[in-house]
Amino acid sequence: MTAAASAPPDQPTPLRETPAATAAGEYRSARQRLGQRSLAAQRIPIARPQELEQRRNPVSSTDVSPSAVPLATDRLVLRLHEPSDAPWLLSVFSRPDVAAYLRDEPWTAELARTKSTDRIQRSGLDRPSRTLALIIEHEGAPVGEVLLWYTDHERGVAEIGWVLDPAQGGKGFASEAVRAVLDLAFNTPGMHRVAAQMDARNAASARLAERVGMRREAHLRQNCWSKGEWIDTVAFSMLATDHR
Image 1 (cartoon, one colour):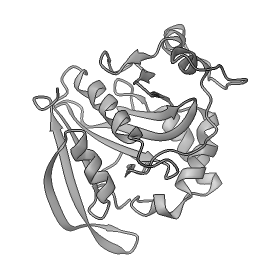
Image 2 (cartoon, rainbow, N blue to C red):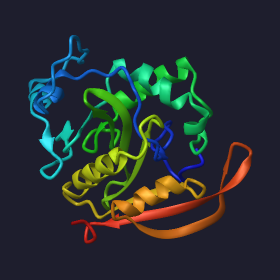
Image 3 (cartoon, helix red, strand yellow):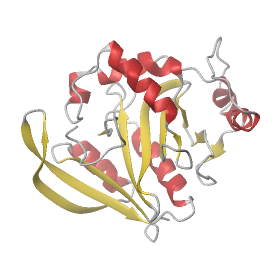
């Protein structure tokens, strides 16, 4: 994609700030945790007892560990991907305005199923993928996703990316979710640095990175070939010593 210079293998890096939309995800435990009405139905994959306990009790974003998901913020729940998220992923990533700053062209239904399966496998920094892919939910409906992945696990270097649907801009969902994931990152033992890289034309994502406290480090001129053209990349980072 044009939004980043690096990404988890076989997966676009989401780095476009476009807020929430209606979607198909359902998650009974998180909604009950937030005092909202229960859903009529839900699809939750078979999980080990510890994972089921985590579903019943989302943790605060200020008290996190690599496996402490779902995360709960004031308005959001950040949870692992589920098979039922594929239609929502298609509804977002099939949009040309979302795909504009990503490596992939707008998704097809087949690609959405493939990408959904891939994201389900990216379930923790302490798992073989060294990647955590989280759906952002507001009032029980998916509104976006945040991804965090190691680029150098041994030295504690990671990268973060995000995508939100364009339908509910201006509500601060992206900032709230990214702050929670940065909290998780820097509560991970040994984490030293988290970077974000994006298409230099993606001004909204750049503003978000600055808003959550990341520092602009570089503007790389025509360093990435994507979709038939050279594009510029802007790079941001946060160090463990920056995190408060």
